[in-house]
Image 1 (cartoon, rainbow, N blue to C red):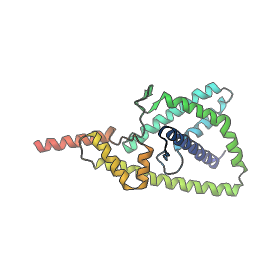
Image 2: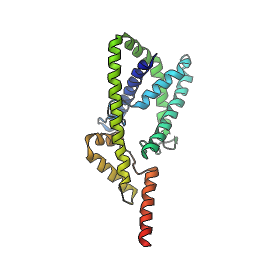
Image 3: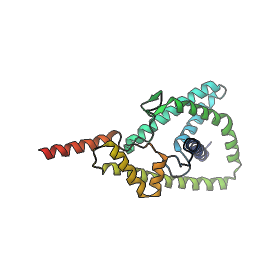
Image 4: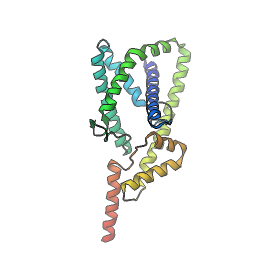
Amino acid sequence: MDFKMYFFLFIIYSFIGWLVEVIQVLIKEKKFVNRGFLIGPYCPIYGVGGIAINLLLKKYMDDPIILFFMSIIICSILEYFTSYIMEKLFKTRWWDYSNYKFNINGRICLETMWAFGLLACLVIYFVNRPIIYVLELIPQILFNIIFYILLVIFLIDNIISFKIISNVKSTVKSIKKDSTEEITKYVREVLSNKSLLNKRLMNAFPHLNSHLVNLKNEIRKEIDSKRKNKKN
């Protein structure tokens, strides 16, 4: 398969992942929430996971048990480092499993691990072949047109979404409050009032803790420093 085919698979897997997340929230909270940090109906982490599983685990198709556990390992590593990288980039914890049993640093937990393994097996055994078969039926000219349209939309979505996400970082940096609870509340209020896209981000990540990690410490250090300067 060439890059274009893999990109189509990436978008399709990302959409399936988004659909899974939306259904989960719909069942738990009885409402529709556009999940993910991108505006469109796709969660790239699922797309990357789907491609990784296709590239690395096809040789284990004859052994579903090995495939299941290898999928768990690959997807868990992917989720862990995605959480870590996004936290370092935006100084924000986008999801937190600290309250779940058998979690690792709140980034991954057993409850999601086995679900990833099951989803990966479904993709390999039941989803892959029909999708590829349908994609190969599309005339090459139409295939290329759809590819470039999706690629442009995806790139624009990333640019806009990253601009919105950067508001979290800049907003937190502008806060001069002392209480971390006040910081979180203030961030959510400011971002929710900026635009519909910011509100979507807040709804997609209801447990977004914008005061975590480095920014929280920076704010406290700044406050403590100002207090010391006033005393002196």
